[in-house]
Image 1: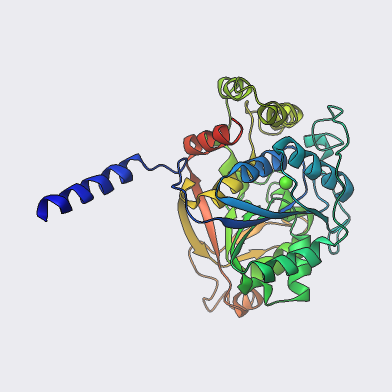
Image 2: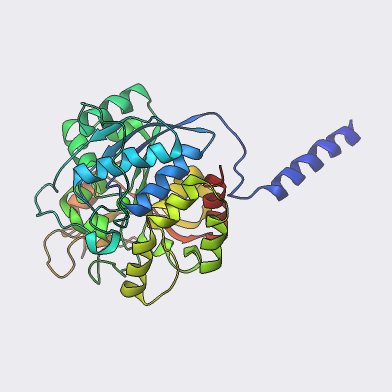
Length: 349
Ligand SMILES: [Ca+2]
């Protein structure tokens, strides 16, 4: 018996040693719902989800953000075509809750996909509104993983209709925010949160099980070098070509924005976390409040990293954020090498 036990343990140890975030062992099918202002990095994130063998994407819900919602919808449909998957696409909010919509054409191009003249998609979106779809799918598949790749307008509207939505979602992985306070649209704010800060505030206070993947995660070791881009192109698949081509403009814009070279893909880093949370290396859990009043710091994700919000001198200012007890898991560091392996595998077929 002792010998047999040793063999079993040995096998287990070998399996553990071989484990990496890029090689998640196959498990039961997981349901994903992806909310997206589909531009070029969203497209890559969607391809990753649609390529994952253990993920069933129940739908893509679109929202105004990088581009208008109609363009985002066309891009979502086109991305599904590149993946060869007929996933339903639901059209959502055409503008933020209160603010004038500010797009990101300068970064992603007027069509969000680098203005390369892609043909229009062959399929049409569903007739059901995105907010209705979110509520219906959360009822149909309780515990689903909601991945948000754009402004949080649709999710906030869904929560307004049914605050109980927060308890039906298993995980809510949010690409958004700048917990290190280095914004990409203002010095303080990341684009997705800045566009619709009131929506983001509703979502972060809602009790949704948020895993926050901020903009900083897509930088540094997550940025694809020229050699790594060439490796992806060399895969020779339609998905790989599309992923790199539609991001050519964003790559140039990232250089203008940061002075750094290479291809930074924010939404795919959040999708990597959704697919395998262990690609996020360090996490901590805090109250996160969204600044809505100040012009200087509009859309700033204020993370109570030292957990001082409930102190006597802060409690009054933070009372609304503290009231429901909501906290978010904040991702601080990330395994760029595993992310790139996941990306390459997703684009290889
Ligand atoms: Ca996006």
